[in-house]
Image (cartoon, rainbow, N blue to C red):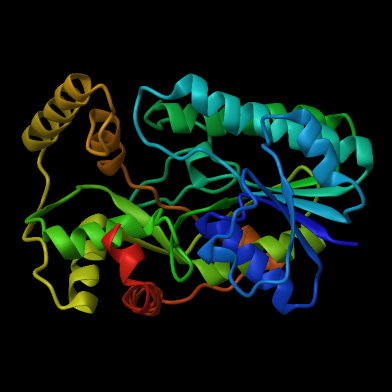
Amino acid sequence: MPILVTGGTGFVGNNVVRALLERGDQVRVLVRSTAPQPCFEDLDVEFVEGDICDSDSVTTACEGVDAVIHVAAMVQIGWSQLERQRAVNVGGTINVARTALANEIRMVYVSSVDALGIGSEEQPANEESPRTGKIQCSYVVSKSESEQELQKVISDGLDAVIVNPGFMLGPYDWKPSSGRMLLGVTKKQPLIAPSGGMTLCHIKDVTAGILAALEKGRAGRNYILGGTTMPYFDAWRLFAEVAGTKPPKRRMGPVIMKIAGFVGDCVSKLRCRELDINSAAIQMGAQFHYYDSSRAIEELGYVITDSRTTVDDAWNWFQTQPAVARS
């Protein structure tokens, strides 16, 4: 029987689909449109048209599957989309979870480190760290709430595992998603980088971790799928080195942070559309999103690829997809 993947058009979901096919699984994908898409070209998958926010289409998609890997989410760092993100990230997740429970199938929920507590330069956070300190933007709130609600369904008997990836780069980032940072830094060549830091991970490692969680993750348990912890300043300089462009010269100070966030919010209001540069994104960039993957390494056999290879692989893929790189 097939494995259902939600969010198969996205960066993580598309890599999961490909990894499942490579190991010989049948794959069913829940998509909002069955029109041909480049991300599924030459892939032998079954499509079910629907939306995770529609319980009937989720029920149809889950009929006769062995398991579901729930990746679909609305990702946007800002203040303005809380209700939409709750509808998708919380409501959609619970639709999938309750359907999986009713059908007695195993579920892997691909959440985010943004649902966990915040780390520091000295002490990366783990799955048991207090879930405090994050900027309470709409994405963080919705992902945190989705895990809280999912745990309630798990307590009702759902066999589900939660994985929390860090900042991912790699191939098949069609939209693009997190690869936009790499492309933005190499195109715009900013002189100043955010003052915080990230946990940079290769999408192939995260994908392998998701499949390992499906096979041997413990129900109700979180697994951080991280990588190399590094300041944004160092990451952006690495991006520039790989691409052969000018690197940033310094970290963003508190005064520039406040000005950039204020201007971004004001322009967003004038345009009636929240820009990527807003006060939530600026504040998130000042935090150290450092995470410890020890649990996944010990229990799932998780492997971490070095940061240079991770960036190289992402950059090289974008060079083969000029239309994606220009978007």
